[in-house]
Image (cartoon, rainbow, N blue to C red):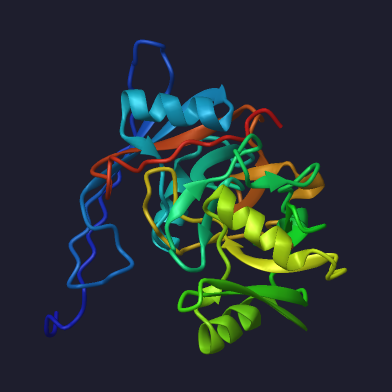
Length: 295
């Protein structure tokens, strides 16, 4: 069969009905993947399971973590196609392990995830925020000097830099996109400003006082649709046309429509079947849970 310069992929599919304590139908898909350095493939042996029970996303996540390892992560189009073939009904809607955590943010200056909920001590969201309108708002501006609002990162606003050498805040009145503002601050100062303590919030309010700006960029942002429930950072996606769209600002979890195998963002409280997997996770200390099923 020629030389060994190419990765070898061996796929063994076993479909069976397993009688579980709760009598659900489970399809077992065993993927034996032997790769020659092909980075898009999952690193370890994984078993994938179709669970024929209707649950919301968080219930499905809990079920998978109790009985298997977690909700499924899709690494590439081959796995997407194999999962699609496991669904017994061509018109099934099935939960995957991907979701959009609107409360997990990072500071440009630090790059570490942290939770910014609706009751944070001094980081206060404006009414109804964050809402990620049209699945397109992943950067944060201060609105009215004190409250935060997630905005499209390509919008142009004045911005607030921080200079570590002088421990000062610099308001730049020139309107730029979030990434352009970040580049400017990193070039001429230290970075876009962070608000990590009450004292910083007070100093920023003093800097903005009397400026008249409606919105001003700060260094808060997030990565959309990453990572997965098991903390895997797979970058593969298979969105349907015009997806994700976060219709009515309530769609934060991902479902697959089995017939075409395309992905749609959906309300996390919908009751759907789901895929689990059995195998190792990258970091069991940082597996994530979803906060959006109330919608």
